[in-house]
Length: 415
Image 1 (cartoon, rainbow, N blue to C red):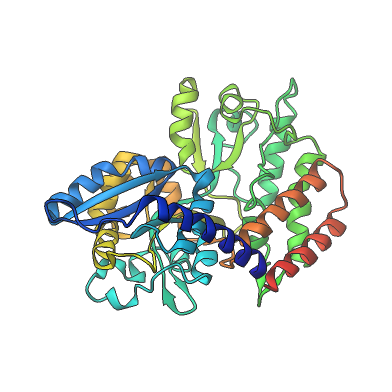
Image 2: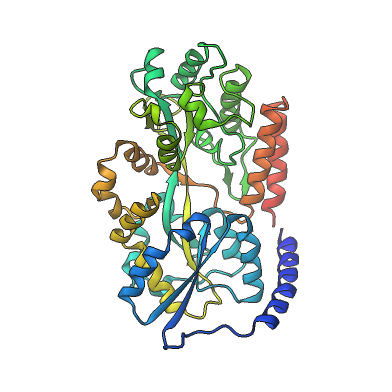
């Protein structure tokens, strides 16, 4: 992996030198003397920044913020180029799973010296799970911006028809409810499980007492992890979950074909828009625990802010991140984007406490964890998805496939 990273950097460096020669030196101030602050925002998040930027510039009239919106599909390559050429932005939005890779490359500035000047950046402001994404090799290299986690979405009306006035709370109840719902026949299923999500198995492994990576060693072949995969695979084997990848989830949820699924907060608005006919007939719940009284687990995701090590305007970059971490501004950003806040204080606002569907996410975040914070996680995630495909679609033996996955993951962890 290290050799691969060096090769990519070398290629990007040649490309970036050519570009630099064509474009000349970047300006650091505007014609009227304002300090330029360059920000890269990814995907739709970058498009939702202008209103927040306007408020920041109003409070800091000596700063001119220039936002560049970058599609997620090309963001990784663009970041590699920026690292190689040292010509990236001042502030960068980082997907959580990318942070270890770029921190390991020395691309992210240590924010520790700014903690006292900007209390909004202190780790205690954020969910415990999110704090794991802030440090790398004892340096404070990022600050959580918005958060998401996965919960259970379920049709309240259809669950009641099969005897569930409340959502399933344990693995046994989830399986029982799915079995009864699938027994309706006529192409109906009990649940949809997304085996193309690299994080799909993690909550169940954690609930079953397994780690994913421990002491830099993969744990996919350990009995608790194998048991969790066998449990999830049984839904496919027994016809309770569809295997076809072309099923349209939200229409199927609206039609009742798929009455349960796991997803993040983005699905709330998607359901309201796609299937308004079932408003009042669905809700959200914690991911069922292994056993009654057990602890529910889920995966924490979202995006962080970082300052590039090569940033020209470091001080204003940190000031901007502090502004975006202010609880009141996090509430304002939620109203603009519906992305959930990362700070505990922001969650005290009535915008969250009065919304039952959103409140589930607040409770789930208390027990959510990030994917393993290792630089090879993206590559390991691809292996996980391939293995689950082999098991659930190809009929591969679970133990054998997970042993193979474990060996491949450990090879990646060596770098």
